[in-house]
Amino acid sequence: MASTADFKNGLCLVMNNDIFSIVEFQHVKPGKGAAFVRTKLKSLRSGKTLDKTFNAGEKVTTARVEKRAHQFLYKDDLGYNFMDTDNFEQISLEEHLIERPNLLKDGQLVDILVHAETETPLSVELPPFVELMITYTEPGIKGDTATNALKPATVETGATVMVPLFVDQDTLIKVDTRDGSYSERVK
Image (cartoon, one colour):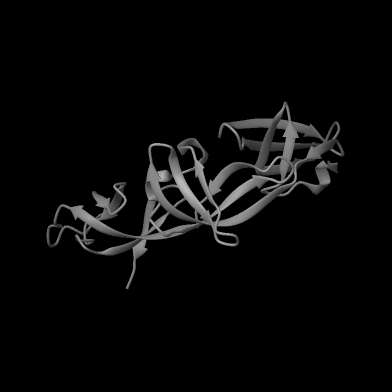
């Protein structure tokens, strides 16, 4: 059990037979009336977000969740296959448990959130940035860099990322996995 004073981003709560992770929260103390905590929760089972308000000091049930390091191996008909880096056991997960599966590269290290009591995988967390090679993009036009113009580029995993005009084919780029956007070229 925890109270609303213990809230922090990433804390997992058990509510309505589901496990929710706190994405963001805000303590509010209005001039008149009691204080409360406004939260945005994300279901770890379905991936849906929910806005919920708690009274200040309200008790909530927390879930024991562990992050375990895994390596992405391959994708097949059963799903995405990962290997535990500690004991080398393999696990197959469905696509809906992964936030951005089109940015997964073979051999990439990820963290899998596992409910400690039932040993069920809840979600897959990619690292904040991944380095991917551009396999195809239209050539940029020389001198057309006065604005922040972007063009589509296909990366080695098959995902499409919007990149600046100066980025060419066979360039290694860094992609932000939180929103799937271009971050920078890798030297």
